Image 1: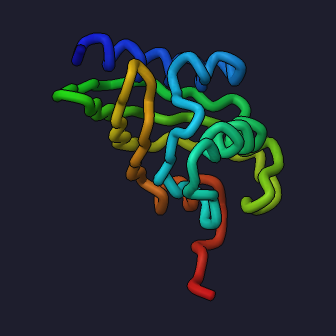
Image 2: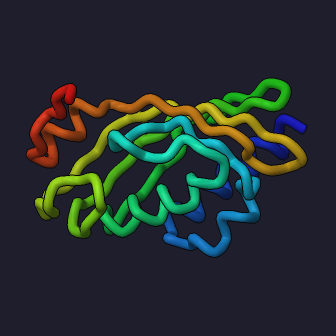
Amino acid sequence: MVERNKQIVQGFFDAVSERRLGDLPQFMAADVVDHNKIIHGEADEPGAAFEGLRQQLAAFDPLVVRVEELIGEGDRVVARVTQRGVHGGTHPRMPEPTGRSFENEAIWIFTLADGLISEIRAVSDRLGLFLQLGWEWPTAD
């Protein structure tokens, strides 16, 4: 089961990096919950991850996620990744495109059920991302 779960997570990242949004249902449950808040205000509700990924791919082209390491236990897989992209497109909650590139590291934690990703949590170097892209650091409202 653990090796199969790792293959599913690798397939997820391959689909994202290759911009194959139509393939995501092969890897993510329809009601997947994504707690990964790269951009403030992203929905944290079942199924919203599909739209969140679509919006991020629209903003970052290219966006490539290279898996550096996968660790699995039971129904969980942890991925240490390097993310690279260019901010060339629009996103409803991002600053105007800067045309600048970024590279940062992230740790993603996936829970899988019935052969699909059911929950996503992630932490990444957001400060590095904002600095590389020339974005203002968000302030509390």
